[in-house]
Image 1: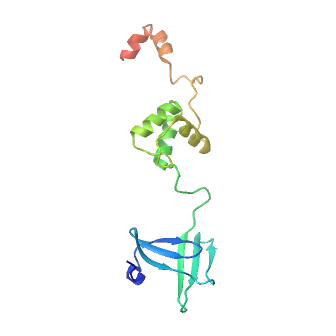
Image 2 (image 1 turned 90 degrees about the horizontal axis):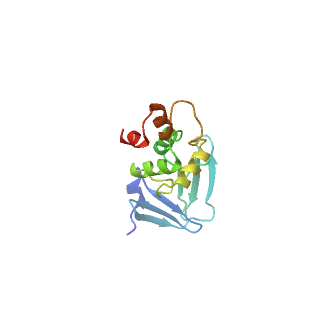
Image 3 (image 1 turned 180 degrees about the horizontal axis):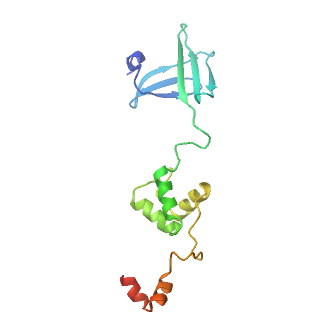
Length: 162
């Protein structure tokens, strides 16, 4: 049932704009639907990064809608900052497969709400300039199991039990 939109003056609403109608929803329920006249127009206020849509209704009324304009590259499928922080912390010591498994265990979805795979981790790392794990890179901080066993003079089995 359509309601009087003025009752929702300060409420958060969702606007769906098509070429033929403007629909206003509050908590998933449509509260208004109108056909704007052909004089409706929009422009972008770059200072506030808002799209301003002025609707000229039949009967002489005007409505002005202001919607924040997303930044370049900003969209709903973006990887969360928390997931990127985990990747940065793990990338130098762990493979993409290990990072994907950790992100999935932590319940952090990929940008589109999907689970993480090694391929998705690799792609996000490249886009965000996060350097990959390199098993051949030796800086003296980390040893492989074989190197640790040789250095300590024990078997691989003994290292695994540590």
